[in-house]
Image (cartoon, rainbow, N blue to C red; front, side):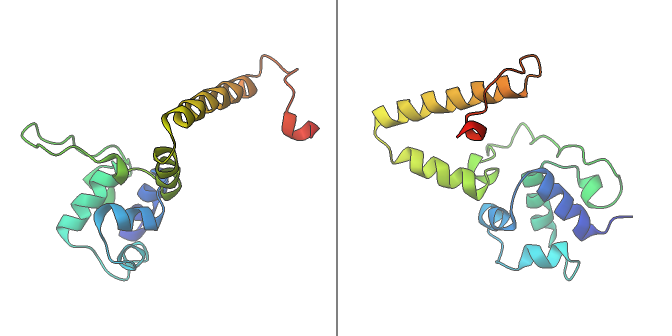
Length: 140
């Protein structure tokens, strides 16, 4: 059976977050999450709640009552707070958004076009229907 810390680590990794991302998102001290994941200490209930929401897993999974990660319960209808996008972005994603934000409107448009081109190339490459696609990196 998985320990509490192992469940926390699995949930964080499934979400694609680094420990640093979690520190920033829920304002933990820099060693707390590591201690939680290594079963050295346990978080207080409010921190557990924040981790469950950030990782979008069920409380039952984190608490060891279920082996299904599931999803966090949806926020109540009376809740005015929406999850912040920064809470779910990796540090690399945040870095890229900051760089994008610093560009001129024209450069932002070019970046958007480039991203669309990369997405299209990825889709074509992933498609096994066309095996004559040239991988330019391999040819260079």
